Image (cartoon, rainbow, N blue to C red; front, top):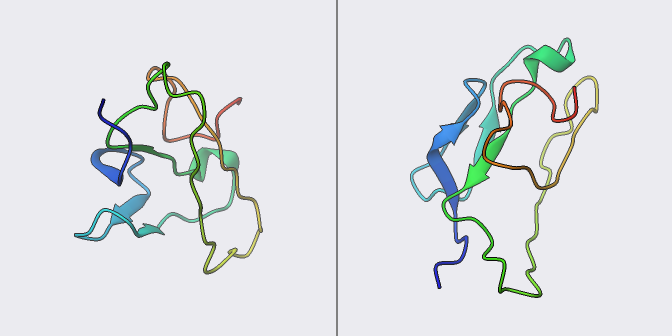
Amino acid sequence: MDLPTAWNLDDKSTHLSVDSSGLRVNYEGLGESYKDSGAIRANNPIPPQCKLFYFEVDIIDEGKTKIIGIGFCEKEVDLNIMPGN
């Protein structure tokens, strides 16, 4: 069973960069509207048979607008806008 262990370097918003470890993400967009959002997927999905999965995120800089969303999404979700919009 492959579990998520890092961010996916190729499945991310154009507003994001990821360091070589795959563990640190940097937002590089303007942050002026929901269309400037950045999202990223993990390197593996959480398997359905995994009944409990824990992950942790540290926010180093909340930005000017302080709008941050953390959560889960399906593969079809556009990563260049805030999920749900």
